[in-house]
Length: 324
Image (cartoon, rainbow, N blue to C red; front, side, top):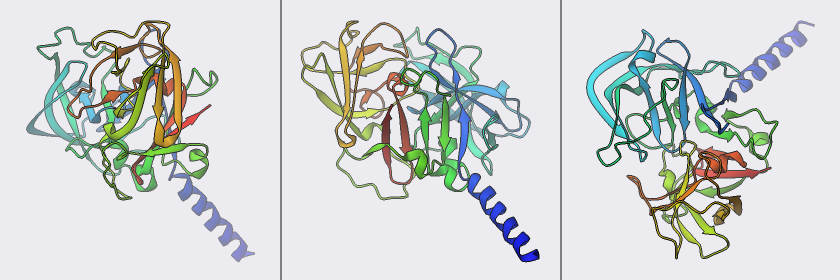
């Protein structure tokens, strides 16, 4: 009888350990009428819960100084970081543990990680009307896997939790869905996804186990009203309100005409999505723009995430798509 009880305890312990290798972090609707859920709650350095933009198009946690708790190690190392939107963040390098209030189970980085303590938000000279940060937004959690000092916090969780994540915010495809990020997804979570490697555009070879990649290396093709395509490295970006790309016979710098059908296609994954263009940010707005950013490429915009689940695999260096 005692042996049976011990076996049961071991099974329970194994089950608890397995459960800790997968977690769900809620996503909340951003302010405004769009309804797109790309806001995540964090607690930094023992501070109070704070809402940040969950941004797969940038890297690292960058958070206002006033949102931090007491357990933060500040340095005098200055950091400036800018976005394509025109926002410029200035501050210093800091170190703190990052927790995710509301996650199931509760998770946090096991040790201090590098963050940017933001002391001011301004605009680039060429974009004096940049959006800035709304008062309700304490920062940005950049979830791109780029090898810089301010690194993606999700890649610094413990064990399998750091192996990647799924963004399940496809409310336009599944109106009853509960928006969330699944970290450390298991085989069942990944069932039904088709994948493309993050080196498909560059033609390079990325070995398994590499936790950093260039997110604009996904070969993606765009077309308008079934016209000629243009393919380029593209970032799938929860932090961009508009999709942006260029195609033949359309001048850059213009908004795609409402009523036109924009098709986004990832050949390697067999993914194709058609959205009727409109004027609503985070919903159906596209712009014609050349490859841009510090790494040149197109941008899917957050629009795509509203129509399908998207997986970021940090172990095999690939992106996955799961339509409804």
